[in-house]
Length: 140
Image (cartoon, rainbow, N blue to C red; front, top):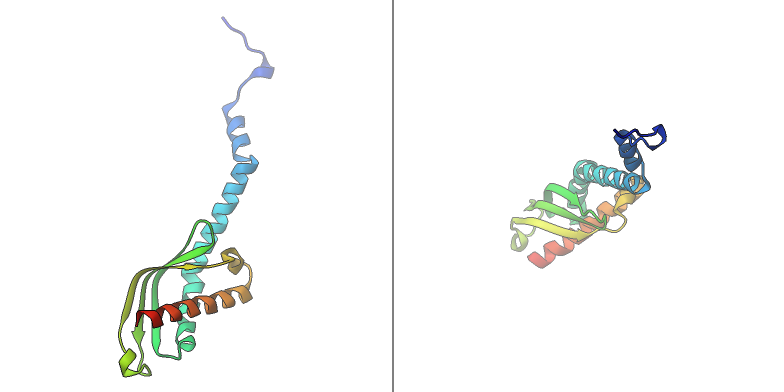
């Protein structure tokens, strides 16, 4: 029969708590939290703001509809899914065509700053509008 001393008692609950509170795990939980918040923000207010601001930035020739926006895990780019640009009445006849793009990847610097700054959100929206507008002219 083996007798153990109370000092060498291995408690699995203590080991799991120590693992979950380690700096590496805390960083991972924090990063996943920021990534999740960015994903929710991109598909919520950012997408609505982008769809509202795009017609004004393109001279009101097309309206924009976006299915979803996903940030890259490295937080340096976004992927727009199911992008559709429909011409408005103000669109010239020679440019009047419906443009549909399944996926569109765009570089997006400082993505995490859009979570904390309204000004950065507005700047980012204008940047994405310019990139989509440039892509729109190359497609036509």
